[in-house]
Length: 355
Image (spheres, rainbow, N blue to C red):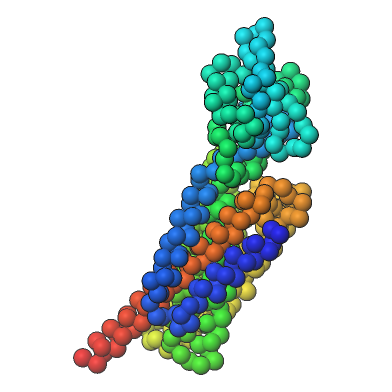
C-alpha cells in the first residue's frame, strides 16, 4: 500500500503538471489554486497532528533513557481511579495501539484532572514513562484529546520525523526534474527546437533548486539528530557532487552566447549529467556505511523503501503521497515561470540585434 500511494501521488502530480501540454503557457487559475491548497494541506498535516506511539515504545525507551517520556495513545477510565499512598492516582487504561493490553496510569492531581475532563472512553495522547513494571506508567502530561489523526512515534527521531514530508519529496522531485531535463535535451538534438532547450534548462534549474532545498532540510535534520549540519555522510557527499555537476551545466550555458550552439552543447551535457544521477542518488549511498537511513550498515532500506519498517503508518503514508503531489505541482509552476522567462530573454535578445 505504501508504494501504491507514493506512486499515485507522483504520477498524479506529473499528469496535472503537464496541463496544459505546452509548458510555456500560463497555468490556469484552477491549477494554481490546486497547487496552493495542496501545499497548505501538507504543511498543516505535517505539523498539526500529535505523535502517538504505544506503551511498548515507552518500555523500550525506558531501557535507553528512563527520564524520557513517550506520547502514547490510550483510553483511560478515570471513573475507576484509586488513590495510593504516594498521593497519586492509579487510573485503569487501555493501550489504543496494542489490542488487549490493559495498563495503569500513575498520575498526579493536575494530570488526573486533565484526563478526567477528557471524558470516559475518549482516546487521548499522554506523555508517559515506564513505572515500576511494564504495565504501570507515570503520566506526565496530557497532549491531545480525541485526535482526528496521529503520526507514528519513531524512537530516536520523535518530532524530527516530520521533516520527512519536505526533505524526501524535494530529493525525489529533483531526480525527476533532471530526468525531464535530459529528455528535453534529447528532443532538442532531434528537432533543433529552442523551445525544447528552454524546457530542458528550466527543468534543470528548478531541479537544482529542489536539490538545494533537499540538502538544506537534510542539514537541518542532521544538526538535531547527528549533532552537526554537515557530516560528510555518503548521501550528503553524493548530493554535493550532484550539485557541482549541474553547477557546471549552468556555467557552460553562461559562457556561450550563440543560442543554437549553447542549446546543442548544454543538451549533450544534460544527457551525460543525468547518467550520474541514479548512481549518486540511489546506488552510492547504499553501497557505503553512513548515518543516513538506508546506508550499507542499516538493517533496513530506510523508512520509505523498507518492506518491514513500521515508521510510516497509513496516515503518514497518505500525507507523504499528498506531499509528493503538492510539491510536484509547485515544481511545474516554477518550471513554467522559468520557461517563460527564457522565452522573453531570447525575444529581447533578438529585438536588440534587429535594432
